[in-house]
Length: 335
Image (cartoon, rainbow, N blue to C red; front, side):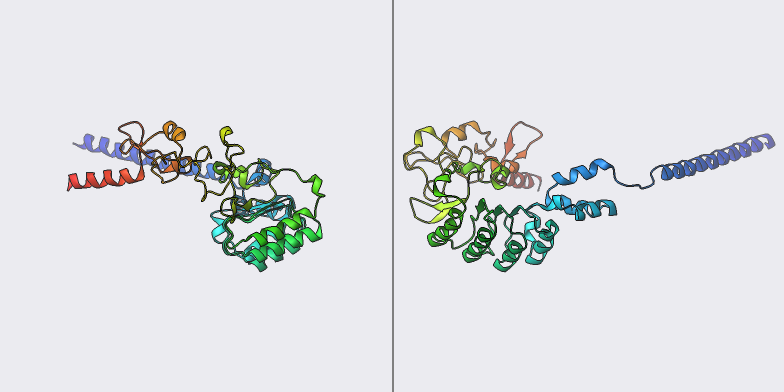
């Protein structure tokens, strides 16, 4: 009995010593790891990436550390082309816009404000006066602006340095033919009439692409809106990409001539509109080529392809409407 107690005591002592040794090793390894990952300055490559970041990420990067904050705030080249889109556009006010554009030190070249409904005429004019070298002014869906405010901004840029080359104002309310004629008159002041070039066609299915919004693929488009030859209203007027429709009066706004969301082609009156899961228009050719919902046999256009619900038990997808019905049916079965 005494021997067994001694053996048991030795085992307990060995276990206690081993646990103490392991704990001391773990503490030592944690201390060594902590010492190895002490904070230091950012890698130099991060500073090269700053010029390629969108505005939202650029502002977020300035909050990482003091070195990046100073690099973002002090480099004027990062602020020569300002593009504000969601989610920043929902919060952008005149005061915030002035703070952001002031970082360009009066050398701002491109100002793109997409769906910035809080921007007013006075706020835009103040930015224009501080940055007279703007050559691209994009204001789509800025519903807080008025046609008179846009005219005043274009006039200021045209009179100072005549540097404005491209203007986008679709989605601003109450723009009439007289307003558009006034804006065009300031563009015509820049070059003699014979030097004006013909605009490239504006295609319906390219209207939401980043290239169209940022003017990389259509450098010859000076003003995005025009007078629709069908209804005589100022709107986005689209050309038809189909070879068979050229010179047949197919150029019009989307309200006068419905167009396919995939190819941008016109959908003539004799052609029946194909049913889609998202409700957008599709021509027959594009409808046949797109994948369909497993239940209702309706496709999504490219703008709403992210609404597809993938099923792990089968190939293909289910649309939003069928997915709701499917979930409700499963719930009824289990109840």
